[in-house]
Image (tube, rainbow, N blue to C red; front, side):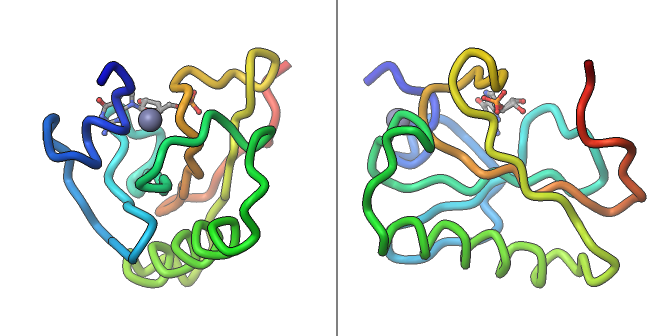
Length: 111
Ligand code: 5GP
Ligand code: ZN
C-alpha cells in the first residue's frame, strides 16, 4: 500500500490521532501551520474532493472536522481547507480536510 494516509489509517505509519468515527480518522499534521492543525480523512481511499460522491461520507467528514474543532477548543474560530488536485496544491492523493486554528489566521490565498 503506497498511500501515506491509507498507511496511517492501517496503523502502519505512526500519527497522533485526535478523533475517530466509523468511517473517518483525524490526526495531527506532521508539519503544522498553526497551533492546531489536524487532518480529517476517510478510512477508505478517495483521491480528492473531485472524486467524492458519497453523501454520507461527505457528511461524516464535515461533522468530523466540526468535532475536531470542538475537541481542540477552537471556539474562537478556525479554517477548513480542502486542497484539491494540482492547481489546488494537493500533495497527498487521499482526500483530507485541514482543520487549522489556535491563532488568528492571515489572508486565505497566497498568490
Ligand atoms: P495537501 O497539500 O495535500 O493538502 O496537504 C497534505 C498535508 O499532509 C501536509 O500539510 C503535510 O504536512 C501532511 N502530511 C504529509 N505526510 C504526512 C504524514 O506522514 N503524517 C502526517 N501526520 N501528515 C503528513
Ligand atoms: Zn489512501
